[in-house]
Image 1 (tube, rainbow, N blue to C red):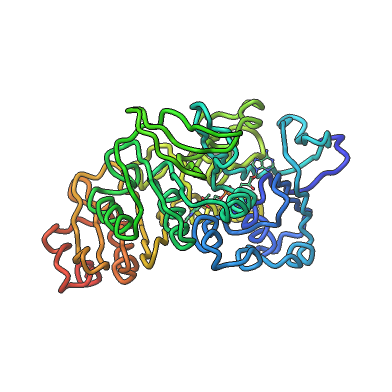
Image 2 (cartoon, rainbow, N blue to C red; image 1 turned 30 degrees about the horizontal axis):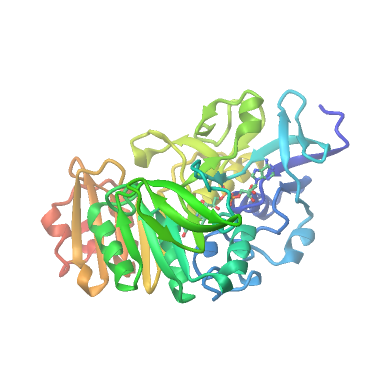
Amino acid sequence: MTDAIDSYDVLIVGGGHAGAQTAIALRQNGFEGSVAIVGDEPDLPYERPPLSKDYLSGDKSFERIMIRPAAFWSERGIDMRLGTRVISVDAEGHAVSTEQGDRIGYRHLVWATGGQPRRLSCAGHDLVGVHAVRTRADTDRLMGELARVKDVVVIGGGYIGLEAASALTKHGKRIVLLEALDRVLARVAGEPLSRFYEAEHRRHGVDIRLGVAVDCIEGEDGVVAAVRHADGERIACDMVIVGIGIIPAVQPLLDAGASGGNGVAVDEHCRTSLPDIFAIGDCALHANRFADGAAIRLESVQNANDQATLVARQITGTDGSYDAVPWFWSNQYDLKLQTVGLSIGHDTAVVRGDPAERSFSVIYLKGGRVVALDCVNATRDYVQGRKLVTGALSIDPTDLSDPTRTLKQLVE
Ligand SMILES: Cc1cc2nc3c(=O)[nH]c(=O)nc-3n(C[C@H](O)[C@H](O)[C@H](O)COP(=O)(O)OP(=O)(O)OC[C@H]3O[C@@H](n4cnc5c(N)ncnc54)[C@H](O)[C@@H]3O)c2cc1C
């Protein structure tokens, strides 16, 4: 099949959540073939969510965020080829090439490469002190500078920007958060949730500014000194954190002929259009039942793990297709947000409970059917609400908003 020097039954590209879980699930399923993970980061697989939460706030060490202890991988016979970037795929020859010039063969290839942080394109985007939060190295670099930093500008009011703001208030930093749209979390949540989080951040001293376009970042001696708005206002700062989404890392696969664009297109079995190549996790563009069948990429640990588990089952001969209900969480201050379903395209948002009590849920409906819940410090709603989403149940909004009745009672 290939004249490559090294060859594996399963070659996994990307040692993040999806790649690690594929290897774990293969061995759990009794797979005895050779398995390798090729990852461009130097570290063994670790959890990414803490990078903007308790790892950034200093509450968790790196050892505590590793997906498995170091010995796990060698004990299971999983070859870890770290610090190695795959730059091209020879789909016909069943081999990949690395930046170091190695060619590695495979029987099955699992592409689990996540994405790179989207960067600003304006002047000053590459100054010292401008950071993304995607990898351990990003967060370590940022934390290494904190001692000299008083004022931080966070660009982007999505989950990562908001979580970073929350973690940095713990370090005593003054923070201005700039969001281009008219509310934070606008792409992922309804207005009641956005307004609640804006108020919470302001209560903690974060200066949230909405509808603000960044013009440029100004530096002094190559180090960030200020962010300038499009309307000319200058915000002095010593650090900028950019959280404006990711670009899926799929170019080698697209160059090899895989279908896709904003991600690699996969079918319900996570198979790409190329033979024996799967794609999973943040980079996989798949038709999702919970998005009315639209082709989407999900950026969540749940999706990475579920797609990985599915692929491991396919490789070990068990059938199945991807139909998992999306779920996600975010920790900011003492607020635990848990979401289930996808609220994109909802036409009604029902608030259940009182946001002033800092424990409530927002329930989203589309055409009278429940499509998603955002639950803030409301784990019971989150647990009981899953059935409403998986069953796309039609429930009167007045009943949903009545906190004297549990969601379980409404399902029965
Ligand atoms: C700061 C932060 C906070 C988050 N918080 C949450 C949260 O609270 N809840 C939640 O559900 N999700 C959260 N997420 C999202 C979650 O971490 C991702 O959805 C998940 O990591 C996706 O897993 P993945 O394996 O697809 O990609 P990744 O975990 O990104 O792993 C991909 C790996 O592949 C490597 N790679 C890329 N290209 C190549 C190549 N050509 N060759 C070799 N290696 C390559 C990358 O460097 C990376 O190590 C967060 C993400 C970030 C960054």
